[in-house]
Amino acid sequence: MSTKNQLMAEIKQEAINTRKILAKVPFDKPDWKPHEKSMSIGKLATHIAENLRWGWYIVESDFVDFANRPFSPTAIKTNDELLKIFEEHYDKAIAALENTSDEALEKTWVVKSGDTIFMELKKKVAIRAWAMNHNVHHRGQLSVYLRLLDIPVPGMYGQSADGI
Image 1 (tube, rainbow, N blue to C red):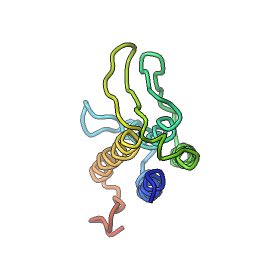
Image 2 (cartoon, rainbow, N blue to C red):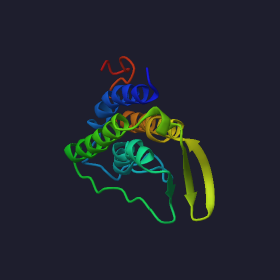
Image 3 (spheres, rainbow, N blue to C red):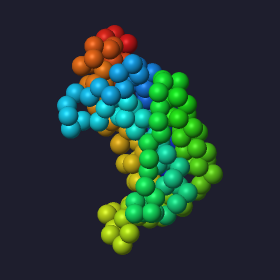
Image 4 (spheres, rainbow, N blue to C red):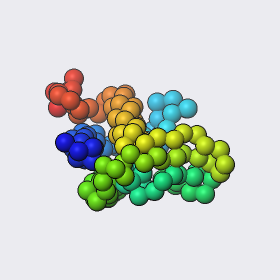
């Protein structure tokens, strides 16, 4: 299987789990957080919903320069809005991968701020790290938030302790 097809298969599989957990976010308490240093549940959920932007952005660009392209989160107030944003980035990530080549995914992608280079990764590695692993990490955080709020946590790779 080609690299791009492997990445698309993984994104599609993980999207199922991401949708399940985003649907549980309680927008009646978007500012709740478990600790003063933590992100609020609304901000964390938005971050998860928008994270697949990296899937398409990495394919379509050779670098990100945080000095010239600051990212601002979307203001989301409902689960429907949250899932809509997720689906938009999901669709764009899949389309970008469908329209690229394995050779293009071997190119280097650079993360920088002005003249300061933070990292250089092959695009295929950057997509896995920035778009997928990053999201799995934050879904884990969100599952803890839900548990602390006594909201049933959906299983990601089988049943959760809540039986879902």
